[in-house]
Image (cartoon, rainbow, N blue to C red; front, side, top):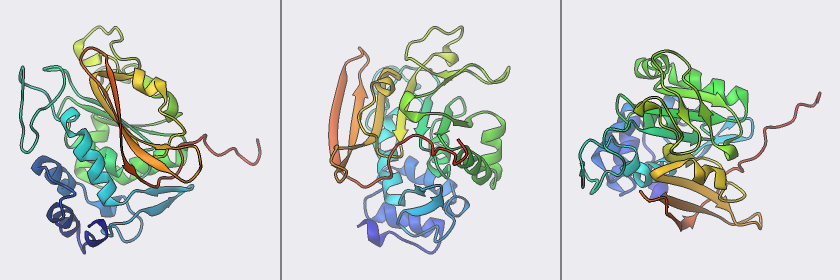
Length: 272
């Protein structure tokens, strides 16, 4: 149904994704409606297809963004109740009660999905968009600055774009007095609960050569990663869902075949 989900406006695109069962959760739908894809896709923003954004990178098709959000949603929404906590269309929100959400978006590219995640994690959540190409990091910031909501997220530090090797995850100390440090090994010592290490959710927007163990190490308990992995033959790629339970146990599940650009080193300068 993906190829039938294109629209002439952001609302029509999202409604088509909803009607075709690619978005099934009302909270996810509301987040997609709040983020205008025209701020992030250079051409045909409401077409349900991937598009180039420069530097051999793409913005993924909307139906793949919907798949990522739907899979990660129990680890994105704030956990506010002990035991089973349900939300609209989510049977169980998973995490530690009261712990602010931390989300890492590796290969953030245009910044579109980074913004959608930020609409779901609540006022205390932090989403980091990580790029290995400085120009793409700057592109994400520029795109998000096109809306008042996006500018507010950047100004408050609830969304941060950074440059780094996504295969190694990310960690940073507090960048300002009112902004928490984030990332690094799960369970790392911190002075305050809102600075606890690790990530509730890790999204990887490019095909990895393997399930990088450092990313698994940085998952919180509980936490989830959504990552495309190349099978090693150059042709087959599959989405893997990697869950870490509250005791640190790991469960890996191969979901379906996809086609992504590779998660690689930054291009070397011709002057290097």
